Length: 253
Image (cartoon, rainbow, N blue to C red; front, side, top):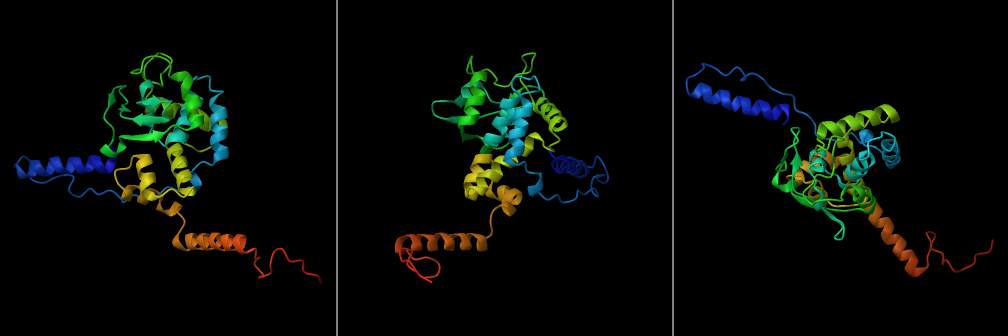
């Protein structure tokens, strides 16, 4: 829960205390938080080359599931708590999909997801499938990602892995950076807002746009690309090049 959310709950409780006559005035009345932009800095989104370096470096951490964690986060866009909450039965290899149904708390107790929209099905990409397959042997209700002591991993454990990766690679990255990496890849491929929202489990398209709108090409770019594609199609059909000369005609000097 964010500081803004906690303050809102505190102010509600104190307002009720004032209404009930328990205190004369709310001490939180004059506390305000600065508005925080939700936009992701494009320069802080890891590149494919950097993610590949992270996966290779994860193999040197001597933590058996570290490469799978980086691969799965980069290839699904799951929140870290959602990844830790995955059970072996949630990965449906034949159907090539992952069912996101719960998240793991820091107390290692599985609980409900952040929002109703967070309950979703995401595609199981081939690289993610190969990374998860060795970890999914056993009962369907067992957690996939475990600590050496057999306890389920939590966000704290994953963040510890990434701290080691930052030290060994020099790449300024967090587990949540992998979610931004996945989202930016969808956007670059031309996926629409609603589909990106569904893939990430955002509560609304507004949340998606407030975070990633600046990564989508603007209308002028889209019009230009569409126009270029149209003209390419026309040239292919008519055999006419950009100078208006038939491509099959040999022009002598």
